[in-house]
Length: 440
Ligand code: ASP
Image (cartoon, rainbow, N blue to C red; front, top):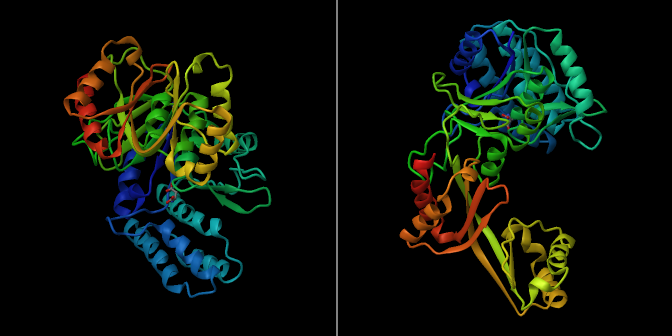
């Protein structure tokens, strides 16, 4: 039988009403055997996520303050869920454990993890499926990174013995037995780990949007949903600011070649976005997958006559950056010119030292440093096979009277990146999106 791992995010499990939608989805397909659950998220825009309440509760307890009110709010969230689901669950006993923990030696990660722990216990009871605790099955090394070997062996064996299960997201256990969480939004990672451990055919990630959008909806009106995207395209778009999944969530399933389907719990009829290992030839030819960008870059441009014949010039430039711990984003070059584009905030601490070293060691004829650069990436692995994409981008920017400060095309032809001034960013993104829409 096919195996699907389904992960539901915080808004999908924020109330009994939402949990019922998730349960309908789970029950609609017997292949949805393993469920990974987040803590209850926001029910309305200025609601507080249970995870944030747990962090606040921990902070109060750790400072020796009164945490009763905050713990009461957490209890109330679960009490509502339990009552409205009509499930039998001894919440008082669980809250007493937290009370005791907070009054003795409170631990931040342990407290944060209780959001997914309690929600998953309740959902497991409601679904009548076994609960599997990551504190016994997902392991970190001493250095705090996932112990892949031990995790996949232990979790794989445990789940192989269970045809169905509910696993809380967001945490695992350290070698000394202490609970440790992933970074915020980390339940996505758990879902991916579970999918790899059970060798799932599909990892469904249920959230509150109908997939990944082909541009930032705060800037572009009504951008279309991306129906399928490869892991590499996703990486390019996420890096440039498009967000849909936790960054680290892609690696386990990518390694195992398992596709991810982003779906909307509130609109299960929508197909969402399918994230696949490689482009499927059967899907319609599409040149561009999405457009994304961000502000906050600095360009350091150097000019030196006969630079092209000076052996080791670029290597020394990169060494100077590396010695100061600065990664560069792009490096467009000409015959006697080269620029490096770096993240302005990262550059800040070492800025003067780097510029002095460049002057001294490389002796450029001219050096110009410009802040306030925004980068926009047009991503799509169909660009390799088609002509005229770059021309369309440049024409769109020229028509919008926007000055292009930098152009970079990766060697894989997976993306074209243009740099514009920050104050032109929004207008440039809209112009490029409009020009790319027919190619999507
Ligand atoms: N509940 C955690 C957070 O708010 C993890 C998650 O939802 O993925 O970050």
